[in-house]
Length: 245
Image (tube, rainbow, N blue to C red; front, side, top):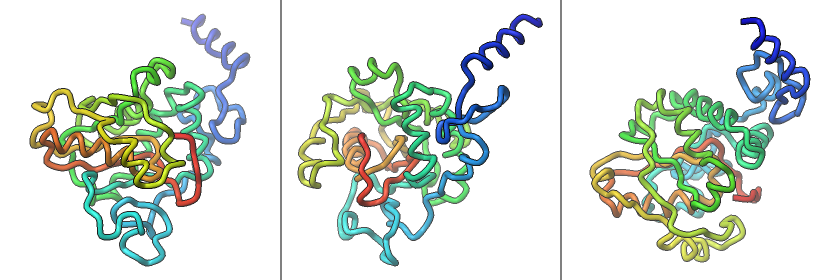
């Protein structure tokens, strides 16, 4: 019984887990990938923001210029946090540094945000944003699936991979709206429409930049017969802040 404890202490001494944001050593019994101080730097994505896509800084208007007067397959997008400070480090930790536990923790923090987002409603299933198979092999996992697993219990909905990415796409943040729409045309599919028909679905992803990927995936799910599709992400990017999607 003592040996595993000593092994764990030795491993922590040699290779301690570090805070995903400030990179300071975490205590041996840490339950979070962020230290307490950095956890407090996660900024909730709260108004003022676009009522449809949740982009921060709507300046008193109901909708941002991208959403105003348009209809969308992804009816609503909500985010737990703004893509700033510790949220950026969290996303990088599970997207580029292989910290799977950070993605599950981020999903649990998304769950904690649900009481302030009643407009999301109640889903029948959580659909992780699909990765292209090559990218999934390189990373070893789909971070959106881990986020959904951390959120599933609180959302009272199972995680179901109902969408598939049919081809790789260029980084969307550098493209104009019409270029994004063209790039995403037929990029997603729903291989088993009988599992989608009549369901209220949430697409789960790490970061929403323009919302184009959420829209492309939602369109494929609606065409397969979904009753409604909404997006819920860990963090929402503010206009003008570029990231590598």
